[in-house]
Image 1: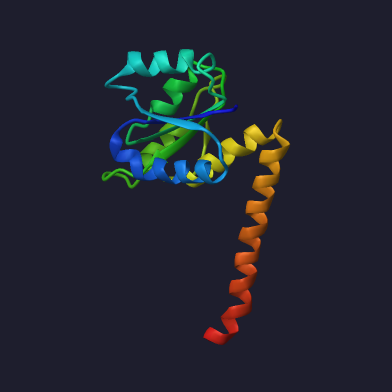
Image 2: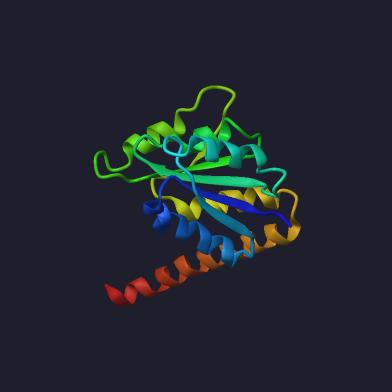
Length: 162
């Protein structure tokens, strides 16, 4: 069974990772969550990344704010796909985290979603898994169709509200 790793730089990132966990639960994708800091627990973060494949992970999602080196530190130590979620911080509203996450050097890719984009990170991870999982691909298609219908229902109702 495929599994996603959710890694937060701090438990203050939990609300963002909760969005990812909710999507993974909805899609019935197993996941595990951990708190590792690229700066305060670098050895533990590295050990997790180095052993992620042998521990059954297929995709890793890393969320961090401010300097946001976590996704890059994880990606530097695994060849599994890594998705970075830049998180808002008090100083620069997440722009610092966005730039730190997206500006990786050649050879160490990190897919990056929007600031606080936990749900999209989980959906991207699911799409990666769905390349070889037809059942999951169907769940994603169904989810898209429901989202489409929601918008169409709102469109049909908007005339009554104006």
